[in-house]
Each structure stands twice: as C-alpha cells, then as structure tokens.
Image 1 (spheres, rainbow, N blue to C red):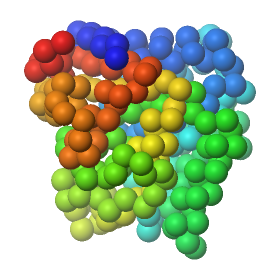
Image 2: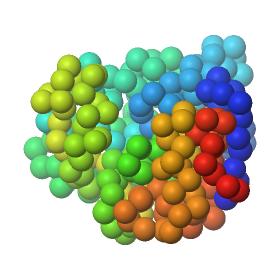
Image 3: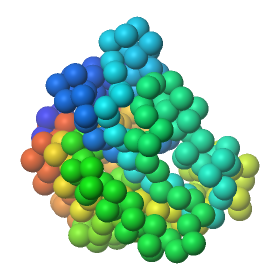
Image 4: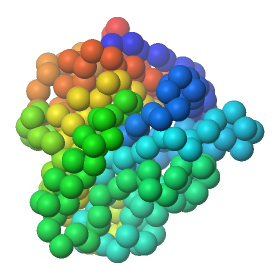
Length: 243
C-alpha cells in the first residue's frame, strides 16, 4: 500500500488527476472503474481541464461506473448516470459506447448484474478502479457485511447510506433502497486501485480501513490485501492514520 497525504481537497483533486493522467498516457485504452459522490468532483474537473487543454485523450478509454440506484429513471436528476453526464462524460471525448453504467430499471436486476460483470470481463478486466470511502466503510455500494467474494450484485442500502443521499433526492423517503454495484471481488480483481478520501468526517473510518483488522464489517479493510493500492487523502482525513 502506498499512502499519499496532501494538504487539502484541491491538492487531492490535482494529484488524483495527475495519477489518472499518467496511467492514461501510458495505456490509451485504459479500462477504468469510476465513482460518484462529492469526493471525485474535483478529480473530474481537473481531468476535463486537461482534456480541454489538449493534454489528455479519452478516445480509446473505457469506463465502468461503480454503481447505480435501482427503481428510478435513468434521466432522474439524482441518478448516477445524470451525475456522470454532468460532471465527466459530457466534458471529455470518451466514446458513448465506452460509457458503461448499470441500468436503473432493468427487467431482471440479477440478469443485469450478470450482463454488467460480463461486460467488464469482456473488456479485459479493470486496469484502474477509483474508489471513495463511505462513512460506514463501504466501497462502491458494498455495505458492511458484504462477503468479499461477491461480484456485481444488487445491494440493499443501509439507512446511513440512504441518509447521505437524502438531500439529492429531496428527502429520505425518496432515496432508493437498492442499487446495483460492482462487488468486492470485482474491485479486488482490478490491476490497480486508487482510494480517494477527504475530510475529517472520514478520518475514523479511514484509520479502521487501513490499520484495523480485515473484516466484512469494514468493507474497505479488504483493500489492505490488494497488491497495487494507492491511498490518496488530505490531512484532515489522515488525522488518525498512524502509518
């Protein structure tokens, strides 16, 4: 594990963009797993800027989103598809056919999970998975207790996770209770993982994930076992990390 601590969120976003840019320049057909949420917004802004300045080309890259809510229209303003259109897909030259995200209204959610997993395998697997960290230790929507061997599956979202999404959905009652997510085994099969964590509110769970026991109770703790993990954090998030 490689731990990089930077001063603040801006520095984290810039360093994350440099990290991704180096991989993309070395392998133009890079296969990525991409997150949503607040933490990666700065990363996406920086990548879009590098693209506008002619320094990055996404034309041969392929991107798989980590997850998507079930039971809402794909164009719902709080869907992850809408998020990606606003913040990344619409800002770079990633081909439409290379923008992958689970269907939010599939006829058969289990079949959709199998289809999505097969797409990843058909692309040769993930070169780089970029992850955030939930307040309860989840990665993607792998909630506490998720078996480490799970691949893409339907996740039952905890009340804590749903509460974190309540503002975007206009109230807790509007937040879906299920999502399709890449499983822990799918993520751990990525050739490289970049974990991004920002803010004091994540400091306690980050320390548990990096330095506590490896346990399904803290899903992110499994990342300790990955052979090519980089953890990029700001000083606030690193407050309780001993190493």
